[in-house]
Length: 346
Image 1 (cartoon, one colour):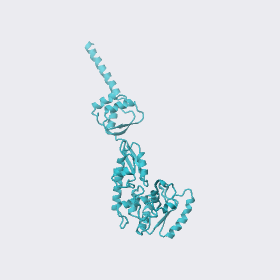
Image 2 (cartoon, one colour):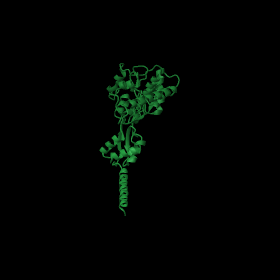
Image 3 (cartoon, helix red, strand yellow):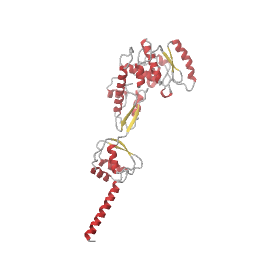
Image 4 (tube, helix red, strand yellow):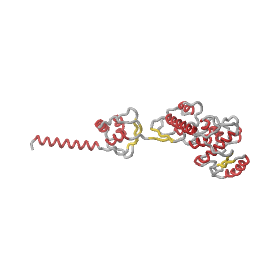
């Protein structure tokens, strides 16, 4: 074999070996045996990210990933967000994943019956939710939502989905717009001759109904009791409003002095009509109940002790029911509402 042929053969073999080596390196999987969470922020590039990932120890070669990204035109195919990288991807698979995957989402739940302060605590503790309102107070909430006065009741109870780094103000706006929409829809479907002058008053009533019972079937009945009491110029006389007005002073025991306190604007045993604001987050069932109360002649109710209520049309019937069901208070399992949604009795 001539020298030129031997050199050509050697060159071909070297090229094949080099190509095979590069291909093997090219297909080299990432070092993560478990999924890895990464975050892509505005301004990140494959170049900056690959160096970070190599330093973190799970990307074998930042240089090879950058070369592959340039050759395949994926150098800038990046979307801001948090991603969970599957184990042991090749460079090409990693680039394809970044180009097509959806960012990781998180969830925070605002539960029916929560007071605003408890909802704000849930938002403050939500993982990866940026606290862009400092301090996170009712006053700041009212400011960001464009509300005058107390924003209690204006957040719709639901589960809200957000991305890492999203601001708490974004979730607040979503919850506020949801409540506005749900309230407007329920208001349009309201019954005739209700004692409310505005949707806001219906929202107040819905919050009281929400706190009084966790039994969905009872909500229209309880709303009916309160509506008829208002129509007859009777006081609502509902414990949850008094408790709300007491705020941090409430220690779990509602006393006679609390019911006689005329300085508490939420004391519906002394103040006629609705309290000044909602007292909790009301769900759609409570909104519908407040705006479509059940017909009847009941004016009173008392907790039976099993989570449900006994309804009465006269004070005499009510007093008998009270005497009967007070016996249940001696039982350890006495409840004025279902265990999953306990509420004070009225």
